[in-house]
Image (tube, rainbow, N blue to C red; front, side, top):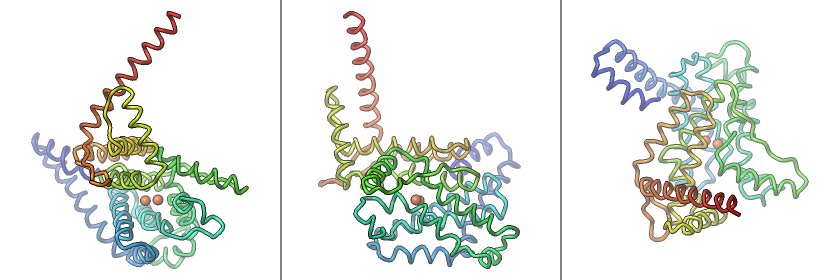
Length: 330
Ligand SMILES: [Fe+2]
Ligand SMILES: [Fe+2]
């Protein structure tokens, strides 16, 4: 939404000369900027609490996590203010954004420590469970929330526990892997609830926007380069393309999957305005040069991959049509 305001709409209006609308939108941009600053001051204690929670991480990773949380806080403020959230709703949304990934660097309980990605799959539920100890009645009172504190906490908890789903394909794969292990152990499987309600939807949109943009794509590339299962999947895609004589590298296959995840992330959002905002992040991420962290680093671009993807899909269509014709003839 931010970029939409900052570029296309403002420019168009300026050209055709609607100064009134121009100033209204500029005013909103200024308000959003102020709120981002004020939220950081208002919730500096919560922000510090979450950063401290990542103390066990290697420094670069810790900074990544902190930066992601900052990006999500900015994102929810943009979404919330564009969507005219009340002051109270905005505060609850900001708290949910600050705490949403709080437990992502935690250690799994001993019992589950052997299950790969267990913490990743359960981090939303775990963070939601801690909300009542952190966001006390006194805390809500201090930040000017009036009315039903339990209700307010519930909204924060729901938004946090619902920021996982329904989720893009790669996370479904990870969740299925964890659930298969849990089943072997006779444990209940983990479910990721749908995002419902405006606060949940706004947090989900901000998290998905972050996944759908350039940073998210880079994150996925480094995950796919380092996790064996993903690497295998990418090698399989390379082989499928080779069957049609199309030369695709493993890095290109990884980027292909990254874009597919971004599109799935976008399609999870029900609110059309928020969906358009996520889509804009995808479009902006198409013009960048990416690096696949192989040795030596591979340089990849979406334009080249897109034309290979088009060729591949065309070749598949032709092969399917031929197969159908042969069936009819037989
Ligand atoms: Fe998360
Ligand atoms: Fe997140």
